[in-house]
Length: 252
Image 1 (cartoon, rainbow, N blue to C red):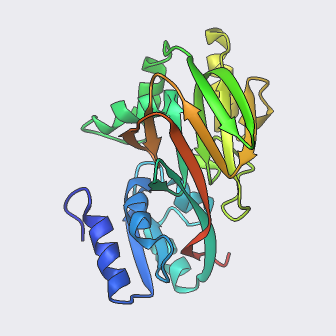
Image 2: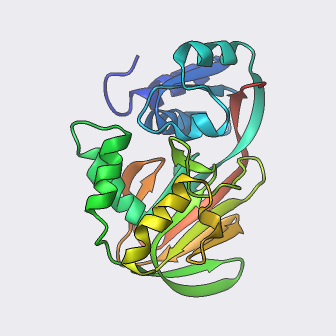
């Protein structure tokens, strides 16, 4: 079992070397991310028992919240191949991003007590966060946008069924780049309600671009990768790694 950061990656790497069929991540999206780093482009499949703060990836693929139920699901699961992603060669599989969500993730990582309600408290506390300027290049198109954040969504949600890109598909060969544009602060409660109810894609302040690759240049290159903060360098290059990861997916 793991004792510190990096242990899950090492255990997964050893499992690949020893030709194990499966690695089971018991934890949240951070633990899943560590395992994925060692399992991309291998024949060892990833299974997940959700025990973290958000469990976005586990819930996206249909895992139950109960540990006992999740174990039953894994026993009858099927192996499927999905897409994974990278930001400046650093892997992620669920959701990554730059801007407000990365800012909150950095603060959240410093908290002694995690959990959904503490995460919500942080969001409310940091609502004065200012929009940033981003230069984006994708599919031969160059754009400049003023945005609170740009999320890179492989799956649909951050966790706890809070969906940043409700239509995202981990097997469609495309990443959903969710641009949350500058909007009046008094509309923030309505925007958060749209996220919580899975309707954020209907907001006029949200634009979703589907692409396999995007290059972003900005003054603030703090990212989060599956909820874990990461300081990148310019430019930030996000790539989709198509059909690169085997997982155990519930049959239900």
